[in-house]
Image (cartoon, rainbow, N blue to C red; front, top):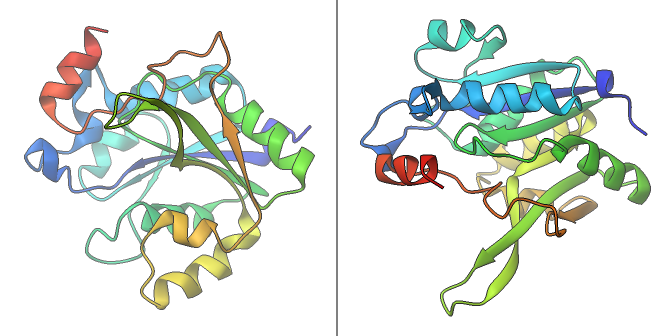
Length: 209
């Protein structure tokens, strides 16, 4: 198994929060605690990472108060999650980086160990989570969760080239590399684990589940 000390966690909190009215999403409270701090705490509780960083572009001092190093995007103009991936890979001092968004406060405690086990078993470059979601027809489908990825740090050069060529979509970049998809659909898995809050109303609704 990959040693947890060889994995750095990265909480992605660098978005505009446009669907939340432009507020800093990671600092909105969920059950009395900032969303990003929930995410960071669950990563620590899961025991799968040695250290944790936060990618944020605003209110850096507030994020630093969570006890993690905080780094803004190296790409300009809120270039999306891949900009956070790049910042994390540039700053990562371990062989592996795991990325999680700040707005999923119920993420699985065993997220990182399961991604690490699959990446090693398949000798893959990337392990990506997938989870059940109800589609437009009311059918339950397993859908990839591309912001939940375990990455080898050697992928930095590829990501730099991809973004320099104008690429911004995570799936388009991960498709260039050997990627193993890890479904979180076992009987004991929480069906709400990957639910994210894009609006303040969704955040309040998530609190009440």
